[in-house]
Length: 499
Image (cartoon, rainbow, N blue to C red):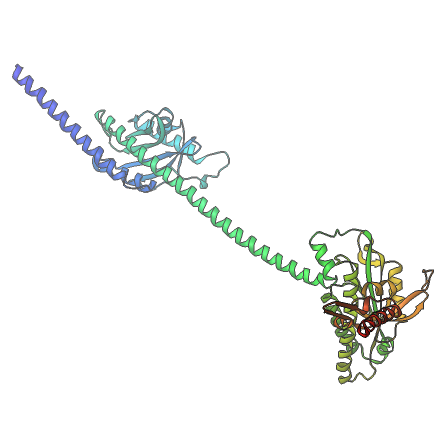
């Protein structure tokens, strides 16, 4: 062979190699462009297998991905098989695919006997496991008359992503010159699949976060609903419980100012006691329903008045009412006493109005009230057992208020001297007889309320040049001395005029 022929042969080889490399680059470009269009694992895998058939004639192929625990491969997509076998498992180190996964090296099989032994080993490995039944396993696809098989690892920086397996009835699927190109394409597929897997994992996490957020919102809505329902129940229960307590006591308990335990204290209180004259007789004459309606109306009106004036309603004893001022809130001894007597005056006015209403309904016998009021030191607080408490008052002051009530005339208010001394500047009273009370060694002076004082009527003030006169009748203790003083002033004025 001369030099010219040799040169032509070498030139042809170079041109053929250049053409092959150009074709390989074009194939890589085409396949890479197609498989990177999607982020869906199945779409990428099926596109890759289809293009492998188009460019290399691989009629039967599959792609397997490494499992999350990196202990086996799972079939992601197959091409050309009747039995798709999606999800079939191949353990590392078992058969051609398992060995390629373990060693991360391309591997060929061309001997039919060995291929059959391999397929039997694979099917045995896949279909028989320690805690699973045969029918629960997915069978790995395979050609019964395969003459050759090639398994190509898909790698990213030497990390295994999966394996591409190709089977053929031909003895040799491709030559060694194709290995580099196939390896490049396998790694391109590995990148595309890994990106898709990461994307799907991210989407899965995002969906999980969205679901968790939705569940949290639903939980919050349900919680808010339950809180609203519970709050409504508690408010309803609270409203029911409020009927068993005086407003001041109820507020003190639920605000935490008053501990719910046995405890008492000594305080200066004004105690009010009242009952209805002839009520016992009335109970024998009226039907229970009528009597209940009448008593409810009376106690409701009296309670409203007591609350209006700031009284703490201790209890109802049939038709009797016990109210006290000065605990748990107080305006001072004098103001508490004035409020209590003012309340009593309004109660009698209201009872008079009720009598007219009851008379129209056929209640012939009128109901009259007696009221007693005393101011003194009493013991107040929670009395009872650890399981049953009653917020009330005890002491001689309560007994005295009760005795004043029994000593009072009908529709009158009888005060002890202790109360009178506190209210006399605002409440008109007249002196009554003294009474003896059990437990008190001295007679108790009493006063009967006649109404509110007209402060403008009792107060007289005049000022002229040379004379300033101020007169408050409620403050004068000795009328004779006051008259004498005024007489002396008049004498001096007359004497000056005569001169």
